[in-house]
Figure 1: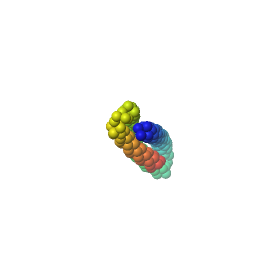
Figure 2: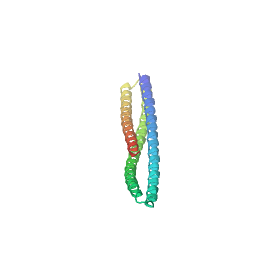
Figure 3: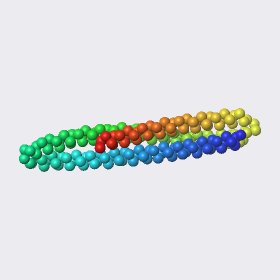
Length: 176
């Protein structure tokens, strides 16, 4: 029974490690999305510079070009507004990403503690198997509870990260 419990705990631990790897992959996706947003921002800045150059050359032309200058200035204002919104969103996303990274690190620590507790419980279960099976089962249950909590936290972080990626994608799409 203790061996089955140990195997079950090891399987749960392996699943937890896979989940942690999935969270890390999602975090990499969020970083890639942030880089994409930065590239889009740079492209918008480039377009804004081009619009500004067009506006300057239009001022040197005849009075008919004055209407084109006004249109270019309006476009520049719109782009600047979108750029400001995208930068604010990027800053917010980076803060959330940092918070998620901290949570991920905390969850990893909890996972490590759960592994240590599992090893301790496994050793306790094997040495006390004949003398105190009930105590070993309580220790195993405690480890399972810790693993369940870590799994729940990982799932919550994954959902938050997914929501953040969606928001970032929407921000990039709206800025374009």
